[in-house]
Image 1 (cartoon, rainbow, N blue to C red):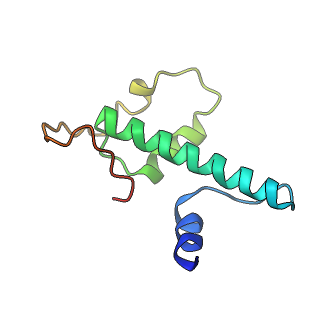
Image 2: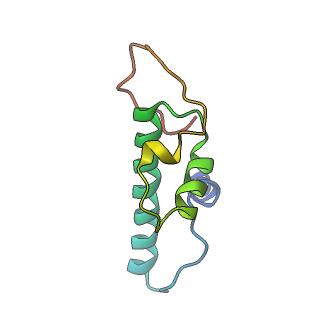
Length: 93
């Protein structure tokens, strides 16, 4: 369980828990995991070189701006790949 706890603290952007019940904490963690996975999918599909952390920072700053995703990351170098495993998502790179 220690490795999972460390990964959650290092990779999920959870600042604090608003509820103290077990259900509230689990809901917050699962929500953060969903966001992490969705951003990882966007990173893979758009071939963005930026780290997931950088992408999450950009998205958190632009949360209420009406901007297309491609436009948000247009200043970030794009990595084009013709790898056979293009459809395989690697969450832990």
